[in-house]
Length: 385
Figure 1: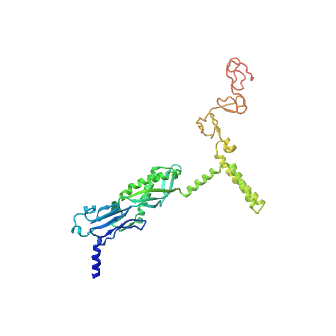
Figure 2: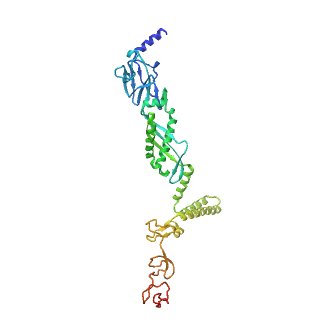
Figure 3: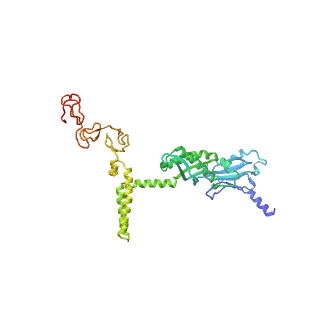
């Protein structure tokens, strides 16, 4: 060693060593301070800033964790010296220790997503395959546990070093929570916030064993397979069309407009009208079969039967009224005059309007059957004879 090196070394030994870390990155979880020969001078200054924690490791074991503040390692007010035991050279000589700075801030906008679809049983669609993605915020809640379980002796630990493991753990907990919640696929979008909070609680049960905590968990999207979404769009489109007759008129109007713009003249007009009426007619038939009540045209009305109690139109096979709940199965009897079938108890015929009160014998007052010429009780001749 030259003379200048000896002078520089002596000068360095006279200065108080300062141990601190200024983080200029956005994704560093842990940083090991480069102590020369791992020797820390007695009287060194330790500066721990907000959103940091300093962890001293002595002889392979975690000796102490320092929270934000300024410390002087002099054997008097530093907790670490009470845990390291006796020194071979006393407090006037340097001691060997590793110093790790742990970033305790929140790491935001960390992404997660399902690499493969999640198979679930849904009340509306049966078995469905769902995909999901979102973001979450993470922080180191226990620096000592994080070093023991995750970082180890890594001198520079970043988010990318654990990103894959975190995503796999999140997707596992997400799949489990989604299966337990049993929320219908069509109602998932309305409960993203509630689902996120429920999943965050389950994730933190696992992450706490690593010294980590998920502070925020966001579900951005849960989607069905493209073919299922396409079928849902078609179903919504059919519902949005409304009245089939108006749709047919709309199609015809479009055909007229296109034909007017067509240079072919009359041929284009005829083809356009034919296409418009054909498509509209097909749609009218489909909607006419599906509609119930009074909004579907003559065929839909003829295919329904009125409730005997409230008169609401119901499907022919209905056993109970959809409006009042009354029983639809009512006995029918023929009209006393025209023979049309009427519900039992009707006072007038819905076809000919004649009263349904049965005639009585003028002598014994016994009820007479429709068209009877003689009384079945006393044999008196009736007015119908």
